[in-house]
Image (cartoon, rainbow, N blue to C red; front, side, top):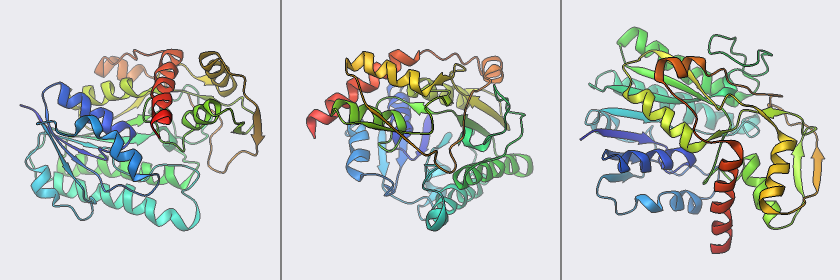
Length: 316
């Protein structure tokens, strides 16, 4: 039986990953400390389907305080998804939280991994490491110029993974996720907010002119790529994880209107500091080396997210 440690297991992507691994017969230990970036109630709900599963054990601890040697040395694969998310909140006084949860926590996990005989450590990085570098579609080899403090911390943690591979042989792979969406998406993220307000028939707020493009990647595709990265023989590499099909934000809103059969009113706001103009992943490397193929189109994924959120709103 394969064994995995998943940090950030109560989060959006982490909870989906845990469910996938358990369904494949893996024994999973999930660690989460319920950061206050959004409601603990929502995160506990994310774990609902895992509750009572024989092959899932939950540890409510901070990575900087948890007994990592005990947890890591008894596992085969480490999926490091824990961290402080969000571009817009990473400025000012909260930056120390980003350093703590994205950089220091990753360093401690890598220090532990170097003395454990693990098969792979997969780190969840972000397209935010690229910033506004102007290279579209963006390849893994293009310059990394983060445009936000959040992006700086994600790149720092990614660099640590590379260093521990090169110096200690820790078998790491980093995945740069591009704008992940789907059921359980964080409430502070764009699509989640749009759906919430549109269902309630309230105006939505769009930062910028609405013509910015995002490479929207459905959460199940992200999970598939993450598992492929773990089980492949590839180590010491970095991969983009995206759909490779960027969509203009205004077009996404039109799709939501069609699916919901609602016309919405848009309030255009000033662009936020740290928000990049466009994202567009070059996915050739992950296609060739990991044989990853996205399986979900944007409209199909939006329908699934709307279905989940309608049920969630009814139950609140």
